[in-house]
Image (cartoon, rainbow, N blue to C red; front, side, top):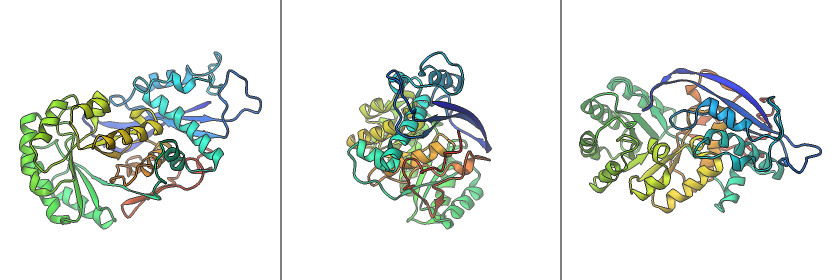
Length: 366
């Protein structure tokens, strides 16, 4: 296993419920086959690459991620390249160091899929006994929290570029201002465009109750994270009001976990971040679990670099009839590690069909 640290700036700070994100720092995780593997080392069938890009609040810290990855090697070599222990993946706790596990699990899955001549989506679908993966994945456009005119301009521009699903950020302004913004967007884009609103946990229960009542006429696909992440009872109560505004949860999954969200009956949809869940395999399993419980799975990124974004596309492709996903995040970075093998076009991404993540597209990175 080889580690390569990287640091990428954002085009502008991204506001989240846990504060602004200005840079994404992480590690490329590469695995290579050995000509004479020893019994105490993982046997890797082909080269593979993964990405571990922690985001504190959703995952472990960068230092904890690095430490976890270095601790799964054989011996005490402190270099950036060392052999893997046979139980390396099992040593990485997806609840404690999910980004580290994501990086290694993705690298191993890439290697296995490349060796078998299958795309990562095909490999994941087969592993989870799912149907053949999709060739394209629909994505939403994210509209920031500007004033009404700026919000409408951005929404109209996204529709002109082929997006038929828009997610509008809310919660930074007064409820009246946000309602006005969303009403203006609905008037501008018409009823055929799927519209989502994301409050990023900004409202209290009283405000959220008023919001769902006033948003009901806008035919929202869902209202995302209207309440703080830990308030599952409040989210469940919003759903029990039986107002036609489905509730989606994102930050709550990092705070409380998918099982708690499902057990509380708190969500109509769940936003799944493979980096925060501990790997593509765990993200796909979570999507299956959510759908069995009646919640719609949506895949998104933690503003990752191109390797992890590509993996998230494969995860989404392996989910049958997946809803538009939050995968159009590459433009948030002011630079990337490599050209994007699945750029957004007409509101969708084409899933790479080459073996593994994207054939040899990332072989020169680590």
